[in-house]
Length: 431
Image (cartoon, rainbow, N blue to C red; front, side, top):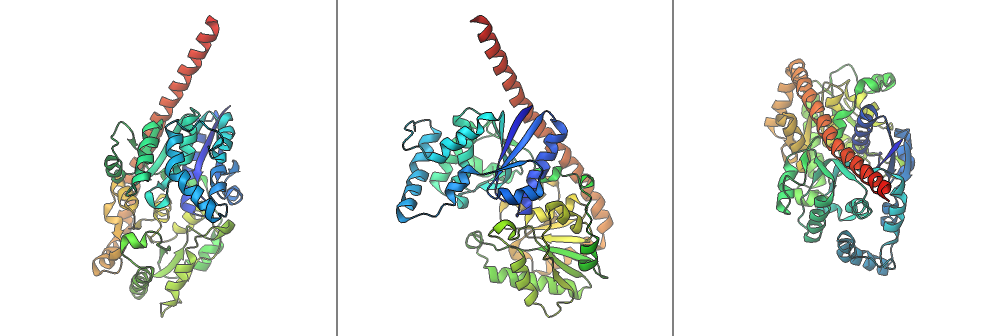
């Protein structure tokens, strides 16, 4: 049996990360049963609650999380600026100065036939160069590597831009999940020969495969009024670039919720990110702050239970509409049958909904408290059956397109591996 290692999962306590990973694994299991899939994650113990696959700690991330002295921080800065670029170029041959974790990861991936860097929005200058290390090692070790379902950029930092250019140019396949990222790749000197436009792999989750017993949650949160789901987040590190403070964002969300409650709706704040397995993000906290800003708390509740990504999707399916700051709360909502607005603070939300043909469901974060948006929400709900039908038609197209792109890129890697096997067999026979 061939073995795939899926790298790049940050933390399944972010249910968006879990959904992206689940859709990818489901697709490979269905299409390529001859492959066995293992996973690495920065939070491996928590990921095991979500998946039955073998999950290993992220070797590269362990080094990032190590407490550092002043000298250690200086070493990291030197590594970031000089060592990784030299390593990528194949000019770092001195084992004494090669970062230890690179060698450890190289040994770890020896037994795998294919490396997949799972999708998301990790390749962006605000997150630094650490996201590129797994690909750099795989490329140096001549392991086929596919990057599937990514949003990339912006790359305002020159060092990050140079590294991104080199890694993406050498990757076997970079599959984007939306077209806005193409502009960021163009800015760093890459063109369409270096990537292909695909989709977010969370669309590949099959809701019928994951029936969940959420009757107790439905009874608790979906009350006798039609229910609208919202998701919140701490905006950092994007607040500075957005020019929107956390306080202003929460005040605007409270105003929107107040309007919807007065219009006859029950509001339930659900969370894609929680502190499960000591994760540092917990969307329940900003949701609770919004609750404290409201006079009518009877019709505003915060889901405090820990849910898997598919349990979250099933609960969202009981709502009439979702308004999500977290992109994957919107994707899960739509995949499980409930139309959703995505509040965008990065280009990824706008790009993904544009691609699906539902750009009107994307709202800029500064506009959530405007009269125009409030009117649009009520308009969509008033025609919700028609909206659901249109949504399902568009998602069906996106679902098939996503699968076809991955199939095509898989076939190229498979063909390349077959050619290598034939070459080795021929060379051996001639000896």
